[in-house]
Length: 196
Image (cartoon, rainbow, N blue to C red; front, top):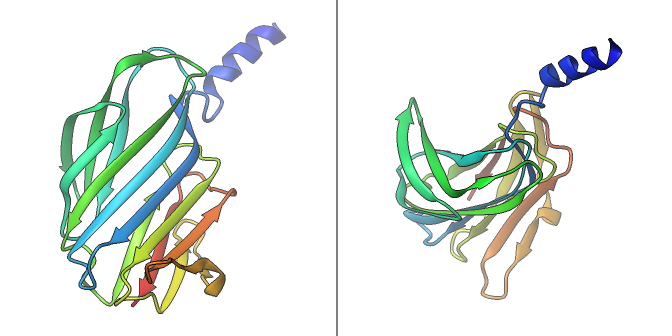
């Protein structure tokens, strides 16, 4: 009887029904001009599948301007995308069936136009799955360095000031802002907000 209760409890345990978890999540933005007219957003997710017979992966995007001017992903093929409110939902066919325990690394790249033209801008990551590590970074043009930046956690109403230890100068004169955490909160929105 205890074994039966354990099996039933396993089915209803939070997170058990999820199809995959994110072992490592990196979101990076590269501003290609001082006006913020053109940018490249890259996302790398190392994923562990938690169920058998998985054939699709989801992505999502939102922001100002033309955020899907170009879109590429590997592995997989985009089979559907639609706008729901202020966000785009993107369905990626894996072109092969994944099993429980399989690990795959997804690389997504978007070209964005007219998305980062204001003096105050933001990069946001939404945690929809159990995630073990999150890293966010922004590369600024030499002519438009970051003057100040914070990280906001919406659900926990927390703000973290990003000091000089988060800013790195690249050999070509550009600047990189970087923040990461291993204490990723489920269903949280992490926003890097910066002024330049």
